[in-house]
Image (tube, rainbow, N blue to C red; front, side, top):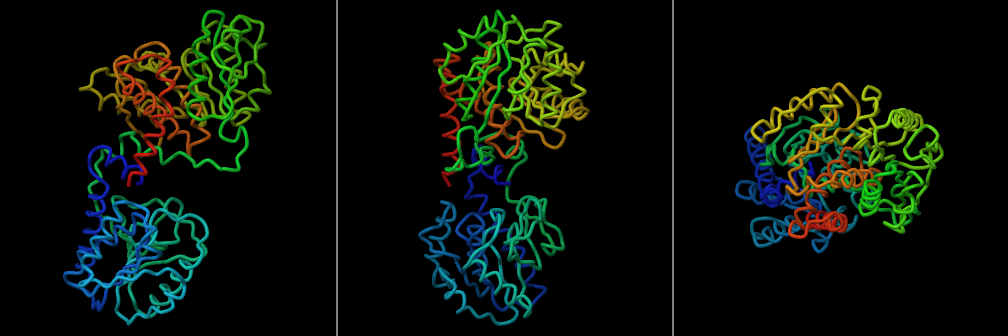
Length: 493
């Protein structure tokens, strides 16, 4: 939901407009409810984030027909979102119509006293709550629960405060409202037991905003723990290269580093190890004497010690290499490792033995080799391509990234589309960079699916930024810039 909210603005539908639609929808529901029940007063408790902003808009609409009060939990100087600040300022200009009070501590909350037949709107936290709740919010929720028992009605906006919207898990203190107004869609963890009667209000988020990969997807990046140590943000093992190809594994490894991975190791033939070391002083290089990967080349300890295995760049397709790829596939499963299959590995793996921790990055030709299915190629047939692609990959496990003019990222549960990129992306090496970015983001992301989504966006957006001076080196150097710009876009509200 948060991702779709940001990506709506990326498409041109500003977040402040979505907030307006949300608040108006809440007000319309309450006006309908007011025709059925006797409501003396409407009291809205608003947080300092987007959920509070939705409540503030509702206050403005309700002030025309109801006796309305707004209580802000915390100081107005610490309101988080620009769209919420904007609506807070509007309310203050209407202070003759609306009673406004800031609740900055438990003493402020103790002074509150509600008469029966009031309507209480919970616009405090919404989908943002996780973990234990502390005072003064703890104290406020206890008081709201007491008032509900005395006959007051509670309506929660989007998610009842204290309930995890994804899982339904309960905090130490939580509200169980009479109604919950879910914005855009019902949240997965909510039901009639923990949320009362659920009403869904559309707020103008389009299907395109849900499906498109954009800056909003970077909400799936974990915040780095300032106490983390070397390796906590990703140990990547790149297995690739042969006596001819040294560039592919180097590009993939450098992309993983640029995407933020802590440590990147390359396992490659001795004949190209010196060239690979020359590409970057950040690589850890392990070599084997053979000219190509075979059973003797595999180092089980390396697979066990790393978080993500990237298998395939410049690997070659000899029969001995096929046997080794299947062995690496088996070891990754044994040690429960994420494994990204790219390039030659896509032609050598056992597609029937994939695990949910597998990520495959085929282009159309490689997809045909993997599945025996030829996909439509024109833009006019893109919808058909999506449908066939999803139907085919649903027979297998893992996350599939179909590279093309528009990339498709899908597993058996979700599908998203990336539309960034330029025609020069057909140049050799861009796929190695994509695989490297994907590998580097897995440990840093809330899920490998979103790591793959962000990787396609980064790779394509970086190419757009350097279109006039396109080169693989410039593409690599632009990776951190795209990540930074995306996080800045999220923070712009």
